[in-house]
Length: 248
Image (cartoon, rainbow, N blue to C red):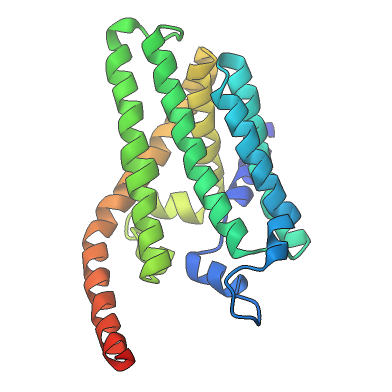
């Protein structure tokens, strides 16, 4: 029951609006500027600043201390969305802050997990430490940077709806449409990385299935959207040329 509640809580925290919706709900003010000065002091954005601080403290520590500060940042990630909605403080600044911090946070967790494995400070045998660390670092590039970056490019720049990105695959639909799977996957990702960092075999092993599910869902989505990216890019460039001609 506790795990189910935690999964629902994490899923709600990660249920962000799609990029076009985000832009509509965070429209510029009447002055035409993309961001108003007061948005810097929205409570939701201040919470994100606190996430940056706690992540910096995590980076300068290790083991259980890293896990403590990292967990604080993760909890704040769940709180900022509620604060933004409750106080009607959704903003473009908050949208991008949350998105960037999430990616930095995920990369840090994987990096420090790989570092712990290579140092011999975990339950992972040294005979397989190098391959395990390599896998974790490959996931930093493929999942956290390339896959998420491709999704952001399609949604933010080309305006492609999220449901056009890999929804033909069941694993992607489960990951993105079912909050139970999303919460389990995100919770497991953090649990597996922190399990390695804290040298907690039970936590890492319990979290492994969800960790693998999240990685496979994102890689499948990336494979599905690669041809879509080229198609949409050509379409977008074709639309831009007439506009450029008119402006001349």
